[in-house]
Structures are given as C-alpha cells and as structure tokens.
Image (cartoon, rainbow, N blue to C red; front, side):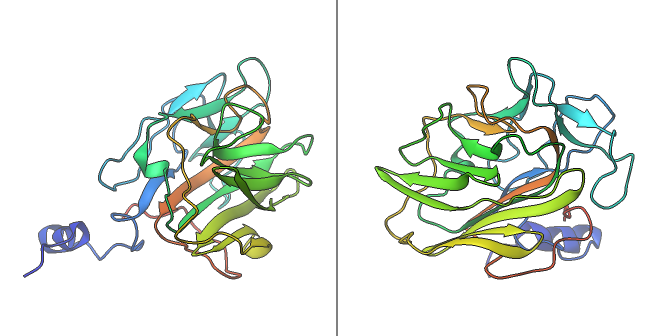
Amino acid sequence: MSPLTEPTKLTLAKGQPVPNDPYLYTNTVLLLHGDGANGSTNIVDSSRVAGSPTIVTPVGDAQISTAVADPFGNSTRGVLAFDGLGTPRDRLTIPTDTASLQFGAGDFTIECWIYRLNTDTAAIIVGQSDLLTIAGSAWVFYVSSSATSEIYAGSARYSVASPNPSINTWAHIALSRSGGTLRSFLNGTVVGTNTNLGASTVNIGATTYPNTIGSFGNNTNALTGYIDELRITKGVARYTSNFTPPTAPFPDF
C-alpha cells in the first residue's frame, strides 16, 4: 500500500475535502496572499511543499496595504504594496540559495495579480538578479511595454513578450514553461511565446543571484503599485493556452 498523501491524511483525519489545488502539497513553492493589517511587514509564504515556507524579507517600504481593494473586491484583506521610491527601492527578498526557485529543466508557472500606478519603466515582478544584465541560469518576469521577460542558460538568452497591463486596475499575469515552450499571459490571453527552450538542455534557476520581488537588488526596475496572490508552481505548467483568470484568492487546501 502506497503512503498516504497529506491531502488524504487531512480528509481521513479531519473530514476535510480533497484540496482544491491539486499541486499545493507537491508543486506550489511560493504562495504570497498579501493578507494582513494595513502597514504590516509580516509577509507570509503559505506554500506547503517540503522545504517551504520560505523566509520573505521586506526591504524599503514594502508592506501590506489596504489602500486598494484586492482583485476580488475585498477592501480589508490586504495586498502587497510597492511605492517605487527611495533607496533602497521597495522589494521583497528571498534567500539566494532557495532550491525551490531553481526550476532546472522542468516546467513551471509564475503568476499573480498586479495593480500598476504608472508605466514609466519595465517593472520587475519577480526574478533572480542583482544586476542590469543577468546571466548564468537566472530568470526574470517583467511587466512592460518594451522589455521582455528573460531566462538565461549559460550564454544563451530566451525571451518572451512581457505582459503590459493598464494602470489603475487589477490584471492577472502569468509566465509558464511547458517542455520547450515559454509563454506569457495577460488576463488569461497568451501575449508571447518562445519555442526554443529544449526541455533537457535549458536549466533555469541560479544559486548565485538573490530572489527579489518588486525591484532588482541594485534598486532598478522598481514597481510602483500592488501585487496580490503571487504563486510559483515548480514542475507544472498550469497554463499552456488561453484560460479564465481566477475569481477568488488561491486556496490553502
């Protein structure tokens, strides 16, 4: 008899249903709801994969805010706020050696809701770099009208059009890799595709760069706005074609 999975244990022990997210206990390596009191700097990672949750450290004025309602109309739950000002620029950091953010040759999905307050710059959502030029096996997910989201493997660079959401409104954005294909999405619609990533040859995820959310570690490409429901799934491409964006916060079961 095979070992019971964590969801099955919960169902048997507590009568809870099988998880709404089939990848929560096996593949979701980062889950930031952004919930909390206005002004709080206690950013909680709700992922449940072995080795998670990870430590998330606010830098600058990065904090939880209730200044805007979340993407689902809740004005008290809280979202992650970045004002794009000051030195250091607002960002969240995750330890450099976090193995769960090293995707290797496997599939992955990065997604969140974003509320931009301006479109002045190519703003980093999440990535691995302290520099303007990233290399090695690093990756970065932007929102921009001109920059591309990028993955590096040795001297090779793979890019895909970045989502460019409107300002002063929530938009769902995502970046996924399925085998040899990289795709970017805006509100469930594919906006960019790169089919040059060989599944067995392109290893993604650096151990020598910091993991940052909201700006690079050298204070460039800062986001001015809000992020909600940031989720990274390792080993699974949740989206490979157009889809309907989520209508509620990501489940914790």
